[in-house]
Length: 192
Ligand code: GAR
Image (cartoon, rainbow, N blue to C red):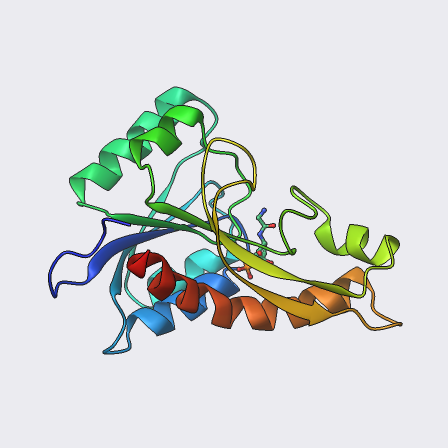
């Protein structure tokens, strides 16, 4: 990943749609001395996203775009280029980016997904893992390509599914692992 720019931190944007707990963990990670990233912007497709509160708390620029068409995506691309952004972390971002958008930032977009990919791409991953009586589920960080949840896997963490797990209890345990996995994945991705 041609991201390292000498000793300077990599200018990063985080895309969110919801609660933003992964965003919060990435912000905390970015503030560590050893962290290779600096989060310059938070982008959401939803002005109601709870995670936008972290923009205010940590004084990070925030922007809302609807991502409904290529015109809106062009505006995002302009904004990212204007701010010299070199890494895009999708963290609970529930929109699918167009092929053109992905091409524009080839190799520079990462996503976290709540399953052990290639199993359970898309939505309702916890329900599907429980329904199929899987012994394990987990989370994956991968590069984003033009196919949904299909880019090269960077790292994964397995989480055991308990007998009485509901999608909610499982999601909660997996989320705790997500918060550790994403920072580790960023470090690993930079060395690939
Ligand atoms: C996380 O579990 C993340 O893996 C998932 O949404 C949740 C967001 O939580 N992402 C996807 O399902 C993407 N397809 P957060 O807003 O608290 O970080």
